[in-house]
Length: 95
Image 1 (cartoon, rainbow, N blue to C red):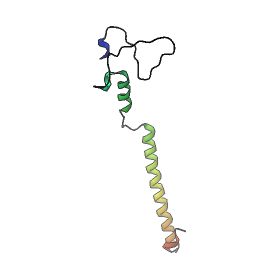
Image 2: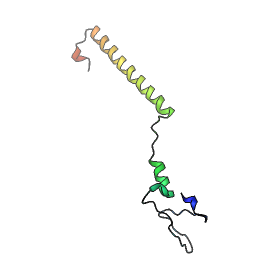
Image 3: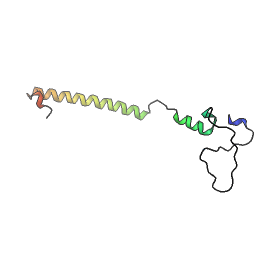
Image 4: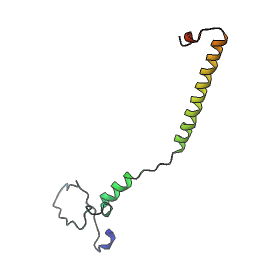
């Protein structure tokens, strides 16, 4: 959209400051009607778009946590069965 203007454009974003000298600018486009018409609107739009795909690390951590959960549950059941087999009362197993 901004390429339709023939003069070279310098993007000025809200909050820009002049360090030295004088700066005169004319607003040729604002983002009120369509936020992606401005550079700031494009940036805001791009960072609000999320990618729901898992990273390889997230996938590996998911597999690891599932395996660890199953392993913990299996060890707990085995320890319970061993305790009952050795004649410990069921209410004493948690001590």
